[in-house]
Length: 373
Image 1: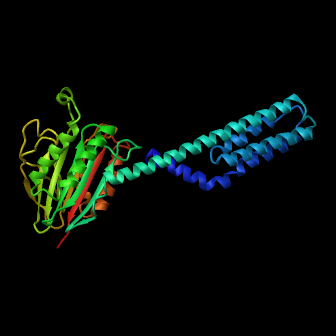
Image 2: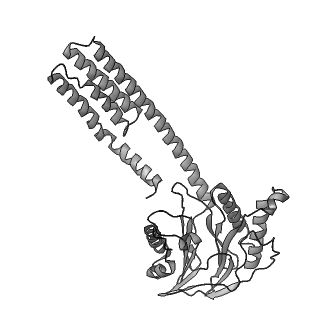
Image 3: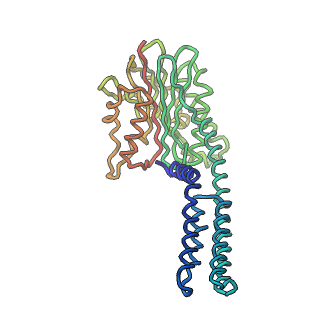
């Protein structure tokens, strides 16, 4: 469970149990009053009343904390009245200390609640941005059943340098992109948005898969370099490994262009094979520098019932605490009979168990099954 999920769970638990938890500070106030009155005059338990507002801060808001502070002050006044020493410097100092501590606790509650509201607003905006940028894959595309999964390395991040997208063409096929942008942080997110935008704008318009690859490389290079000086261009290292696929509806094959990306895995029953292409091209963004003007397409069988897994290197390079890489090709055949959503659910649990919940790099996986006619 990520830190954010744990924080959300704590907030929900706190809000739901706040009324019941009020018994603790109220009980403490009553207990201190009774015991202090019964004990000899030389023993004073009044200072313990400061715990009531301090405890309330942990699970309640500013109003409830102020109420507990007021009750604690009233209890201290009651103790002083019963003991007949309300005008003594000791009791007055205790009352003043209670007022100050209660005020500080209320201020803490106000600041915390305001920060939580601001954080919630930021999360809402981030969730909308993530939905626009990394849109969910369609569950159905012609004869295909598709599911996508993205696991960020940073616990509080929802998006990084890994990406995937799908598009339908006019000639009855589904095109998919999975990629991994170099680097991390805002620069990687910016380049991910650039590559995804170029794919969505052209995937259904380019007549052939090689033309689409040329378009993506040109668009990526132009947008990443148009505002840079010549000196910056010489040291530019913006690129993305990518895998482009075109899967016809009426033909049991898959057409693949590899641009420095790990090969897809094809599962047929208990049999598994990587779709290793004979020509792996340079990553997206390097084509212009090396005068790449065409891309070679490799075609592989993709029959009804087959399962195709696309992934980024964050999966195969995930290490356990002992330094062992995640055995993706060994684990994947376990789930070959499941639907794509179940496959990714099993994979997520197994991958997180392997790395003990801590990924060093973002990971993305797309599962595609060709349904029987």
